[in-house]
Length: 115
Image 1: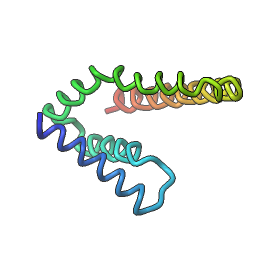
Image 2: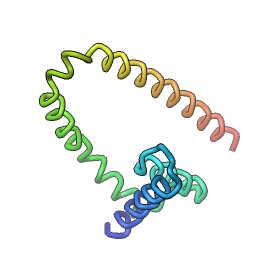
Image 3: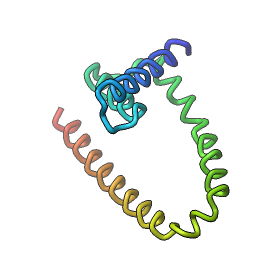
């Protein structure tokens, strides 16, 4: 388990360093995730020790949404003022994300069937 956590944290650290040193306007966690994805695609698999830790972390993912829910309650007055704009942005970004995910899945499935 320690090896898997070390690998995941190393990619998170690499993403943070890349974000800060290069001045890229992308969060370090996102860059780290992209680096990790590129690494696994380059290796053509994911090591079982890392996969086991990732699955364990995903099991507790809903707990990470609790602070966001508390933040929504705390920002009640601001939501009353700008709530419609926020909802519009959320709906639009969700639609874009779903579209990009669907296109990526189609591309990966076509690539897999050819190989």
